Every structure is written in structure tokens, then in C-alpha cells.
Length: 170
Ligand code: FEO
Image 1 (cartoon, rainbow, N blue to C red):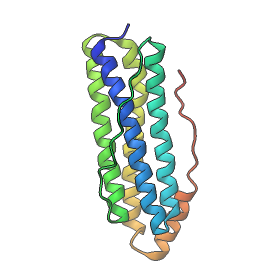
Image 2 (image 1 turned 90 degrees about the horizontal axis):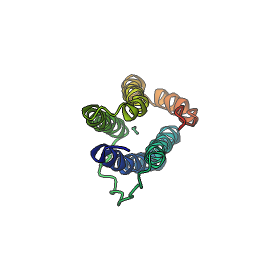
Image 3 (image 1 turned 180 degrees about the vertical axis):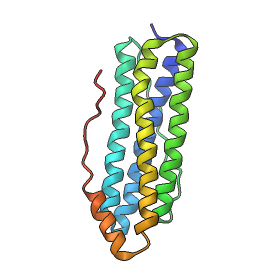
């Protein structure tokens, strides 16, 4: 049986991952509206990954006999007014999510819940990758985004991102 605090935090994280998906769909909407469909595609796939994260956490709780409670998903609260603003907001959001995962990890560690720590190891690694991808996107935009041809090429590159299912299977 899972510790109540640990399972409560994971349940909250289900909502937060769904919010992340919602936020990234909002970013994608912004880019579609600008005609940058490659950037929009990148965030559409990011949104799909966030939904996967929520489903994995839901599955973990269900597998451990915990009934998941769904709550209201907040409206995306980031005002995006430039292509770079969305990228920077995306990185800041991922850094925030990393802190949330770390908090759950610490709670599991406190009650010697090694099963949950092992489950969360995948998310710790995933957060490292997501922060790295967000930083990479900002770096590329700084290098190429201010030139029309560079932006065209970068948009084309991001158009090529394809969805792949999470490597974690429960
Ligand atoms: Fe589910 Fe981008 O963290």
C-alpha cells in the first residue's frame, strides 16, 4: 500500500501533467496562428508526451490500488507575445515540473518507498531530457530565429519531430 502523502502528490501530479499538455497546446495554437507550423508541431507532440506522463502516473496509482481523483484543469496562464517568449516559458515550466517531481521523490524517500522511487526514476531522467530539449530550442532560435531564412529552416526542422510512445511500460 502506498503512503497517503506520496499517493496524494502523484494524484496531484496527474492534474499538473494534464495542465502541461493544455499549456503546450496553447503554445501550439500561438505558433499555428503565426504560420510557424513546425514549432506548432513540436508543441503538439510535447502536449501528447505530457498526456502520456499523466496516464503513466494514473496507471501507477491504479496498479497500486489507489483510486485516482480528477480535478479541474486550470486555464493556461502564460501570456505569449513572441515566438521566443513561448520557448522561454516552456523551459521555465519544465524547470518547475522538475521541482515537482523532486518533491514527490523526496516524499517517497522519506517513507522508504523504494517502489515509487524506482517508478519516478524514469521521470527524473525524462525531466533532464525535457529541460535539455527546451534549452536546445532556445539556443537554436537565438542562432537562427532572427533571420527569415534561418527561421524558415528551423521551422522545417521542427516539422520533422515525430511522436514516439514513452519507453516506460507499467
Ligand atoms: Fe511531464 Fe514536461 O514534464
